Image (cartoon, rainbow, N blue to C red):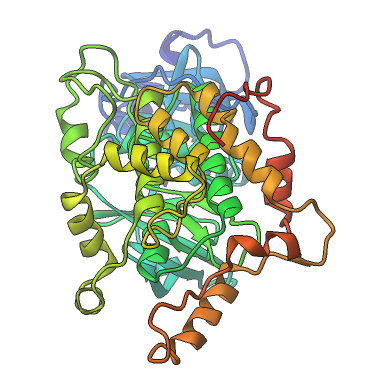
Length: 487
């Protein structure tokens, strides 16, 4: 890298597009530019891009660490490569400025106080700004967007004022640890279960993540409403999460905080479309202090099987937390209605998790009941099969990702569901809820009446497209499992 001051003076124009005969004073210009950024960058610049799509590639004049140089700059999703430096953009705010010197304009982009990009042309500056800002931290959310309604805790529908385009907004407390790493992971992920980030804004206390629009609610909200899922729906829900974990694992990442509030289900979808939020990700190394991580996820109370102090989170903790989630869905019982009316779902979830005890003997007893071809306890409306319970046990005891993906329960759920193109499709959850609400008016006639789609309706229901696709391709990842599992 060379300082421009030492560059030869034989060319007719300088790096800013000004003619040499304009007597452009580099020393004076450099001192003026240096007042806008620090003399030494403060962030780590070794963030290898997960996505290798090149968005922009151009030789630019840049300033950092006290020198002005010309380098090839390559923009990837959330990563700007300058020379050997890989700069994670989601850790920076971006600003546009003009610098006037000797009556000449120079257009600038500033990444925090660390880096300055120079442009002699306004349109080129604007193009780079528009590409980079989608990954940076922005301010003044309400200048461009208007909140519409709160869908659930910290999750809103939002509209862009300029064109009335609709998005979702997810509010994240700034006290949450590892946000730079988490934002980086989300910006650099392409998976249908991860909401695509459009922008991230900040105010004094929070970040607001603007994402593609998603009409859904957490799994826990559906449990509170006593909505009974079909077995194929629960299997599809868990399988989609496992596919997400496979994707994350392939990119040396993990979720870090899987629970019944962070898995969203689209009410309108026949396919049980999900979105996963609430990531807490950091690339820990063995021996790193994880106390901040444990402090933030202590609502789960369950971290991973065989948890030991200083063991770092990873795919094993995600699988264990998924086992806890499946246990909660399977053995959830109705919450007192008076308590439900007086508390919001988030507080109820906190209370539920605080009181939750995983009863391994209950799992074994229920497997024994099903093995004897008896009906399980009627209060557990999501107990479907012994293979389902076997998967819970495996997830709670250091099950591998490949073993979970090829578990017999998914095969059994596929076989129980009718093949595609028969009669009508699965009703959406919205339809199930409407049926339930209509039936609630007759609750006095039968308090024990269930308002869901029962498993004996598989014979008259078609699989929805996503369920059909997932179930038909359930063994694509590895070879079919042996059939020694419980059925």
